[in-house]
Length: 317
Image 1 (cartoon, one colour):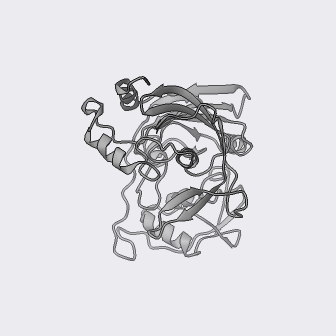
Image 2 (tube, rainbow, N blue to C red):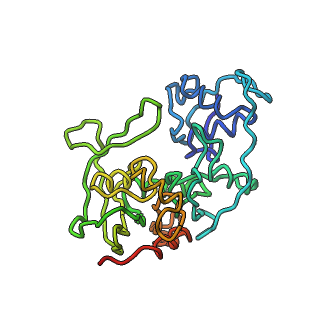
Image 3 (tube, helix red, strand yellow):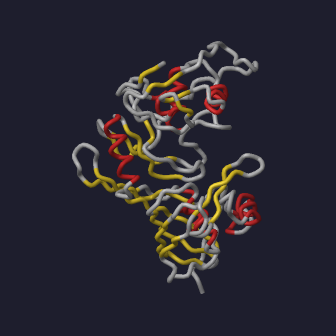
């Protein structure tokens, strides 16, 4: 049994176990969580369960060796990596996450931003994600350096006191009058076990109310650049809301126009420019500082590949 102290409070259960069980393959850690062998206050828990001060965690005995019981090799430590820093003090850190990098390790992903940051900063006693971004999304990502900062910032996210605006390039001409999307979202798993989200109706008991505010930033021939501010932080919210409205995000490999995505990745059209990512970028983040209460507003410029793509598009006729 392990009692959670201030240094571990606020962490996700999976991240806590990965630190506690050094040398145990990540897949095995997730396996014992799914099997219910890990208990928090005598109850089953999920990998993303947030641990609180004085929680009691039952960690089952596991063999720490070069291989797991199934013969798989122990996962190597995440390689140290620094990311562009847009703000940092003793309480928090804000980075500009590149597209294609997961925010944390998990099923099918050995490591993510947070594991790489911890490897790059071995002296840091506490580093935890305040929120998440999809792997394909770039932009502002907030990391807490103290438990007190984590809890206060997460409270702001839950109470919708933060401002999060994304730049999204969508296919087609967005109707300027469509400024509010208030459509519930329903999470589900595909037969292959992949997480997906679909738009649903208020009558769906499994739907979660989801609100996105949309503004046309610039119109192009065949495309529209949008500013999307989310009032709720649902999984894949922007991607599904925009697709449900009839305008998919360029490069979206889950809900987008797959033929267009393949053409852009090959460099067909747009003067041979190859575009191989999703055009969704967390460009603005506003929050109250957890210690001083000062309102902080940060902006991340469009990545070069996104700015270059926009430069190749034509103005509408």
